[in-house]
Length: 133
Image (cartoon, rainbow, N blue to C red; front, side, top):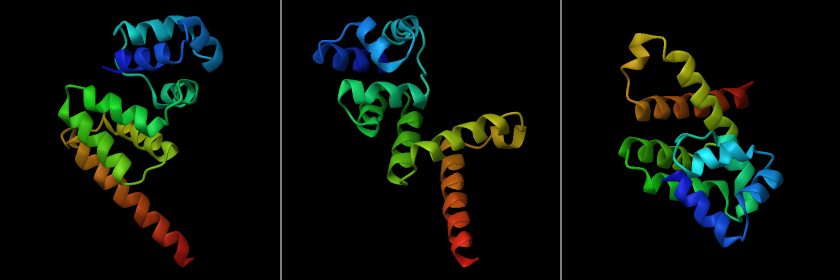
């Protein structure tokens, strides 16, 4: 789980929760809720803030957390995003666009991995078109 992985790296670095909160700019109560599995889905920004302090690249931290997740679909989505070469900003845009589209019942029925592959295809297609102009 995410909380266990983060705690493992925090302890390896000899950091207390207070240390990590101060250095990352994340509220200590939020860090506690992650480690105690009260909150299970932290944002990508959370990972971006803690990974340099923990001494592990964001991609590696996400990969390790995804391998420990029991949801194979989540693992596939994270792996697909990493293999597609999505930047952090592009992945955030994907998540935001997916949330916006969730009110549309047709898009809600599409598997998230399919939505990611479609999004990656659109990103690549848009980049190709920008070179033509």
